[in-house]
Figure: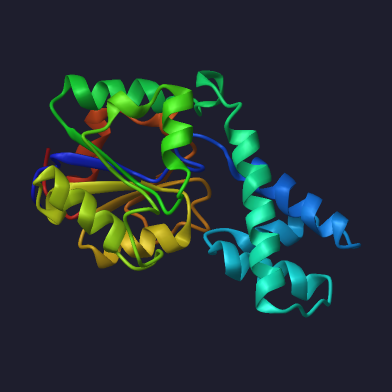
Length: 224
């Protein structure tokens, strides 16, 4: 087992919780189209692209629309979402995230963001997280969505660290699969039942310490 030299982070659900803003924007769109969109419905959109999410939403409302109209609706939803995240501040950083990023810095670990969001920079700048990253790979720099490993491979490349010396922090199954396909270690954030492909699972970064990275080495039989 190679020694961990870099930590790569997904954004939503790992460092901040912007899922609620996505949900409220989709719900508002559904309501304007004349039907309801529940939190249970929203579970189907996790880790799914904007246009694919719109298709799911329209199927719930039993609507079929022309492509031009769909583009217009997707843009409207995104405008509402951006309006919401533009009001975010440091109070919306998830528990333990800032402290763990600081610990990485203090212990000489490289850090990268690996997010599909095209609005990642708005969120990072508004919450004050931008200076904690050596590399930022977001949806403006990738062409393939997770579980394609592109976002994490680009992060490792920009950090100058081999994939097998990297660990990814992810809250979604597609993200964990992307980390695996990139040849990286992976720590899940959320439910062990859902994220069982991760090396181990924590409830939030509040449970994470740099010392716990040793567990990754133990997981493959290497002593501390």
